[in-house]
Image 1: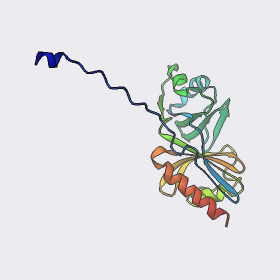
Image 2: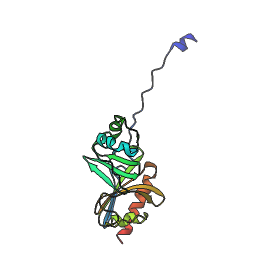
Image 3: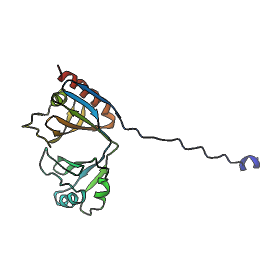
Image 4: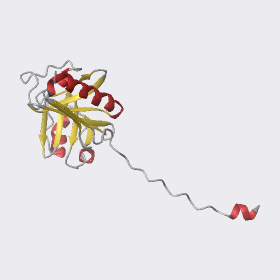
Length: 194
């Protein structure tokens, strides 16, 4: 028995784990609208009182917008106004907005949500119609100009919508709803072509 107990087995090799982005490589196009998954980005959900916004804006390198339905962008980083004290900050330049906020002593709450959210681009002349197939937001350029941002719904899923150009939108949704949102937008793009 002592010999059996003394005999040790070699530790099992760790399995190789590769995180693949949800919707990786998915794209669909119809006459007038294209729907495609966007590359991964770093994101934070940021909450802060008015007194902290100047320090946070300086640390993030982008001014936090203070007006409803607005966004600001600088050097690959976008801040979207979601509420009086709430922003979604998206960094597509490979920088870490969470680390930038960690250096700020002003009162705030910054939570990394990079792996929670998925981004989908909807582009083309029929982009607004494709989104409006399941979103009640008025997407006319007068009501929702370039740079406008809003938390809204698409079908049964909550989304954050950003207009990036006259005929282009960024749709942010939770990973768990990404297949549903992508399929909904794909169907909407086909309907918009009719």
